[in-house]
Image (cartoon, rainbow, N blue to C red; front, side, top):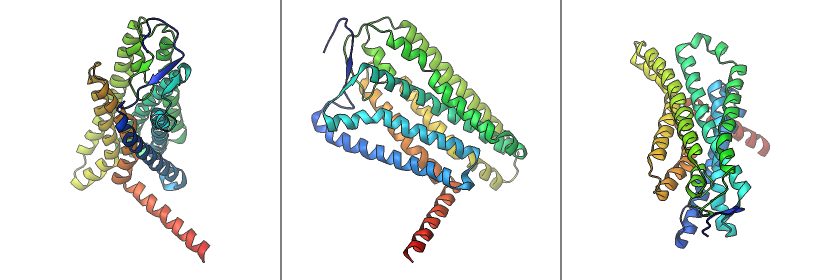
Length: 315
């Protein structure tokens, strides 16, 4: 549906693939991934809430990250599932803007939470005697609140500028959800301000600022680890931040691929976005579950309590 200049009231979401034979396999794959994301993150979230041994700053931030992962996957993947069930791939204009706003906010928030977690690891390793004083509940709540508030504020200029667009060359979005970039691809309005803002804000907020804080924290952590004489002691201390470090490497690797994909390659963009919105939320709780003894111990403890309660009910 090509248009020179008109008021858009709805968009057509082309989806992951427009090949009819692939719609059913894509639906099954996305459904399995989405349900696994929900189950794993919800299980980790409930475990952190129910087990008192996990009521620490690191797991408080991890619980926030689980909420982000579940919400961002729901926002980005639900249209793929609904389209297959209802055969309706249209989204009204306002709903598309709202989806872009929520997803953009959650993407920033996830990165900010990981930055806060790096500070937590710095305090735990470099200032262990003052850890409970520095990372008290009030500080953790302030850090988490800042991540949430700033995450939702930093996308407002993008959405405001997009809402000012009055001309679109098409109402077809070649993506599987309403992301910010596809809006820029189909508009024929002046987008120079939005492109400049995207480059500056993306470089500062998503790259330089968080990367600087995370790198600084880990430089101090590495220096503290090198001062430990015992190799077993160094390995034990490094293990406490290995899960978080794995998430950081995974996220920044995805961001590098996302920004290095050519603008004329929508298929590659979709694959990177799918990895970012589905695979990373799938891996985050798995990484913390496999590489963290506290989580595995808490899970076994909670499982043992459940078995005991069931046996007590049976008898």
